[in-house]
Image (tube, rainbow, N blue to C red; front, side):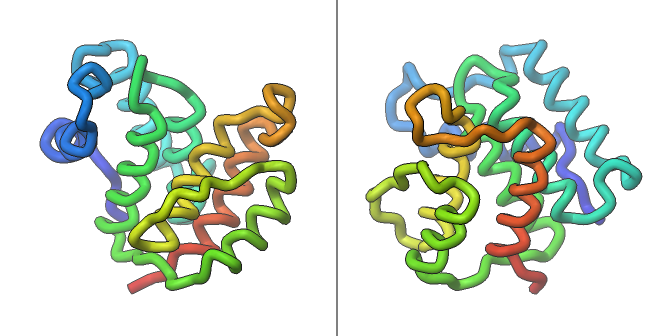
Length: 170
């Protein structure tokens, strides 16, 4: 299995994320946050432990939930989680299934019944699904009655289910 390395973040991922942000004030400069970088390094090391994360999907879920909901950095955590997931799937020869929005909505209804999904248009349906998944894992139910009541481990397990649902081997 191939793993993202901290060098990959410095060489590609951080710049790719910044390239998508139009407002200079909102561009995340992860490299300046030494505490966040240390947490990222720790996540990238721990994910290699096959006892805790035996499969590609377990590892992808751990990276995604840790980065998205762990708030390692001041700004750009959800973007970092998405880009990390994309990168991990790419280096391990996975791709995305072609599913309809209706199919994704059924999945979301099963696990996040109260969540109001985005009506934004995306070029690909999987982009829409990942955007909504990333949003919902960061919204606790008590905040506005639209999120979830899952703990970290439950979110990881749901993430495994989601990633198996949307991802396939090449």
